[in-house]
Length: 115
Image 1 (cartoon, helix red, strand yellow):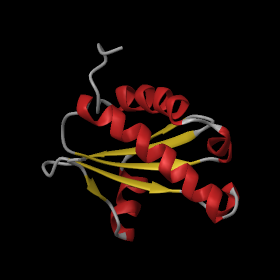
Image 2 (tube, helix red, strand yellow; image 1 turned 30 degrees about the vertical axis):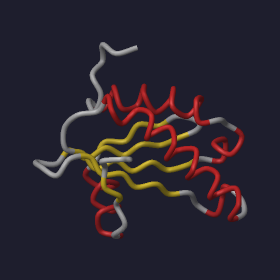
Image 3 (cartoon, rainbow, N blue to C red; image 1 turned 45 degrees about the horizontal axis):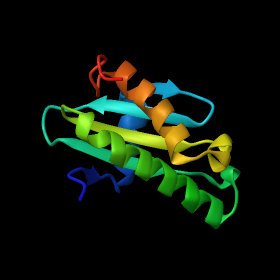
Image 4 (tube, rainbow, N blue to C red; image 1 turned 120 degrees about the vertical axis):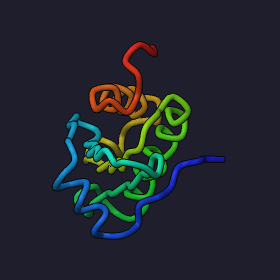
């Protein structure tokens, strides 16, 4: 079972967008906002541009699964927002996980020495 909290409130998403640092790839955009306490919290969005509800939900599931697998390697207190992009629809969670690991290492959420 996951030990991270889920971001649901609009103001929390906006704070991460405005004050967090963004990391962009063709499949995923990650906004990472460092906090003083409270562990790691995650928010996932997928806009109408991605496709119909089935495709948007699939994108969110893929991102959630990739995050779940990487979560044990993470440390600190962060709000992380993942925004699905149109290319996400055609990818598997392992592809997304590779991109996500690179972005989270850049942000400092994950240690750089792990594979």
